[in-house]
Length: 400
Picture (tube, rainbow, N blue to C red):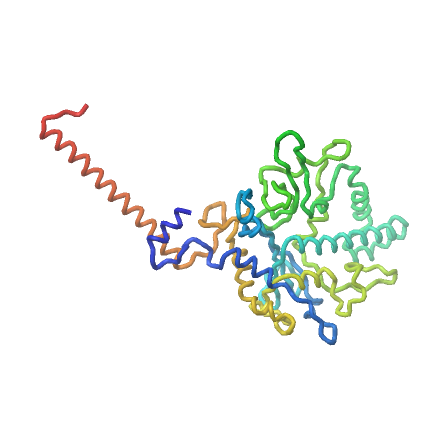
């Protein structure tokens, strides 16, 4: 940007780019996070990770980040070299009191949106299926065992029967489950009308507090078309308009905390929160294990009791932890807007990051310099006008 370049020339004491975020570049962070993945190594006791069963998982934020992409840079037809990367920040908390702030003994983690949804949606689907099975057994067969439903799924017969019927008849009622679009797929084929093809995939919405399905301009779902809505392009085989059902997707960014502890099976063999992880000795549900293993971690500053830094197989992540924490902090402070662009100025519609000393100096210097130049230009203009009139008067000329 010419604006930033001019500031760099004006201020020798300010940073090279005074309006850039106080963190390192987006590209460096993206590469950093890719290196921060755990190498799954097992010791003699078959224990490769800390015990996170006592903790509760809480969604914190979804964020788009536009970063330099090598493949786009090599593609001469690409409109930009910046690709949209999608991240989710979540926490592991010591209690299920999600309405209260965490002060200590918690961990903060960042993972790509695709991996996050793969684990959380699978968990939500299994939980939903188990709930409907229990609902049929306890309610539709007149067992009327509402106590078990309440304990296991926090629901009752009246609620679960209605909900499960809607799930079963979703398509007949004109709805498509939003989780059908977790992978990028075409929703509009231009064929011969010379218009652009459109695709659907998950996006961050409502300043990162929600995840929904958005419209993209490319088959890799890198470039969002924020002016279009997915439902405008959804039809069934008969050409009838369809709507999206977000009930299942909403479970992935709920305000409540989800326990990472595996619930013991009841006498009927029903498992509330983990159908596929019944032989796991640490009693941690599979969703929490997968998210913890794949995410980049920030634990040391938050004093989590059983930190990954105590385990030798996490040496690579331990070496990167400070930079990972810095990147997550920059996201939480509002360094990027909803589209993933770096915010270079604080405005009413954007939440800017904390301003550094160099940024404040450069901004002050620029404002004072602009005012001074304007005053000096006005003074020169005044002198030139007066001088011109004086010359005309002395020569006896007249102004046309």
